[in-house]
Image (cartoon, rainbow, N blue to C red; front, side, top):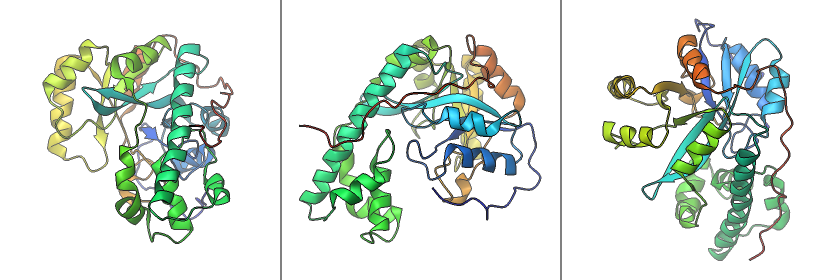
Amino acid sequence: MISVSSVAKIPGRRTSRADLHLHSTRSDGAYSPSQLVDLARRSSLAAVALTDHDTLSGLAEAQAAAGTSLEVVPGVEITSEYHTRELHLLGYFVRPDNIPLVTALGRLCVHRNQRFWRMVDRLRGLGVSLADEEVRACAVTESLGRRHLADLLVRTHRAGSVREAFSRYLADLSLVPKLRLPVREAIALVVGAGGVAAWAHPSYDCTRKTLSELRLLGLQAVEVEYAGMRPSRIHELRCWARELGLAVTGGSDCHGPEPLHRSVGSCSISSAELDELRGMARSPWPASRVVVVPPCAALVPAEE
């Protein structure tokens, strides 16, 4: 967990904005849920969504830290698949006590844990010396991934940066099989939990036809405000969403202090757009109600 004391408030930010794509230490982010809330306040945001990968475990901490000064939308980013390709599905206003959703997320996290240790074995096979104590020290969350190994390689001076760790060691580890829910199933889980299903950072080759197909599977929204996206692409996605009757969402996809263009509040949507998403949710979870989500997996090496 890193300090946020040196992060300056972003001037001129409208207080009606919402950043609906944030990651915390409960998955592959560098900030704790409460630190994200602090940064959101400094950025004068009205609302945020904590959308950790395949887990809702940070929601209680974020809502407790926010109190009544900031809306924390219950959210999650689900690892799914469409036409054999990975697709990240955002779920907003989901009920964190919904058993089918929590069970499915638990299954994904168990697989993440097993895959993490298989990647450790793969690295060792490539000649990278990693002591179990070092690995366990970085495996402190239930939603593990390559980013945790990258951070470990940097901390142990085997790589000079996260980017180097990925390019030098971790690129091939993407070939280690990952459990991905069929997107139809993921959408049904979000909707069944009372939430709104949105496509996170649509791929570069996303077309109107792709969005139309996903809409038929139950997709309700698409992320149109995202760091690094060209204005022309944002306009195109907004037009398609309007034509297809999809709501729009957006957020920074912040994972930590770097890169700066993905800091908390750097991308956001308006209060009217947030209200549209809220209106699509069935029995949305009250922002003031906190639930403790139990851990879904013990962080131990997988048994082959």
